[in-house]
Image 1: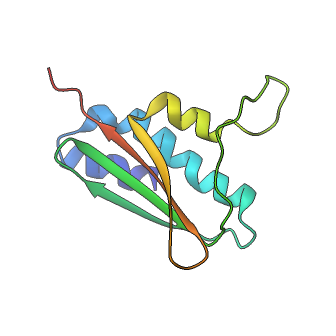
Image 2: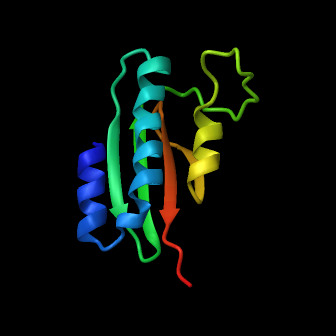
Image 3: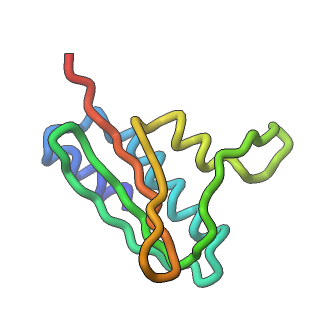
Length: 110
């Protein structure tokens, strides 16, 4: 998924977003693998006028929460990591059981 994202960002003239977007993209399926019983998800990468939006949908109704993880904690840093590297992120609940976690990385225009 990271290679596909980076290839698209190159094609779209936004290679400067690759590091942050690929780090954030890696975190979302990792959270699905850790917290969603069936471990299935569906990613979506969309080009926007200001950058890229990435969504990962899963069937779990449990929403991610921003926690204060200590250095001894083995988990709990996913939302904090997103907060640190992307412009904005959030969760949309779907009509069926499940949710979509999304983030946007925007290019810096002087």
